[in-house]
Image (cartoon, rainbow, N blue to C red; front, side):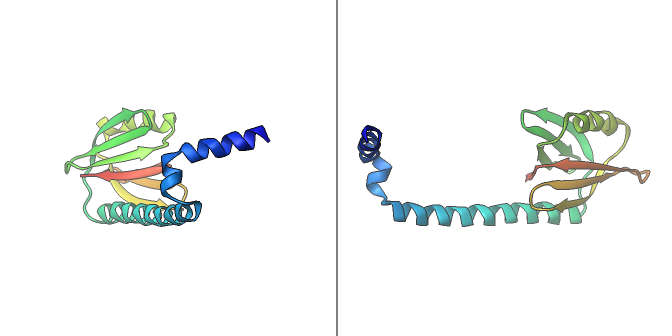
Length: 135
């Protein structure tokens, strides 16, 4: 009983709870979920359109906290999140030797599969949890 009373008292002090009733919060949450899904679809479509066109070859592989970034010869950057350390090392070794170009990107909703192709025709497969294209 004491905990329920305390929880109600804390809730009444919350400025957001005073502004929005719980039904309004649920409606707002549902709208924000739809916006997030639409934004993810838009970002996926942007990556797919870019790769379907004439994407540049990988110049530099940058390591960052959440994954890697591929700097491309056309000035664009592709950020890959959730990439394994083995894949990071393999890319760091292959990029100076081969001119790897993005050939294909596939998404199953949870993860991405990127195919990089060298000028000699060799393919390198990368799995990632997130893909984002920077200008």
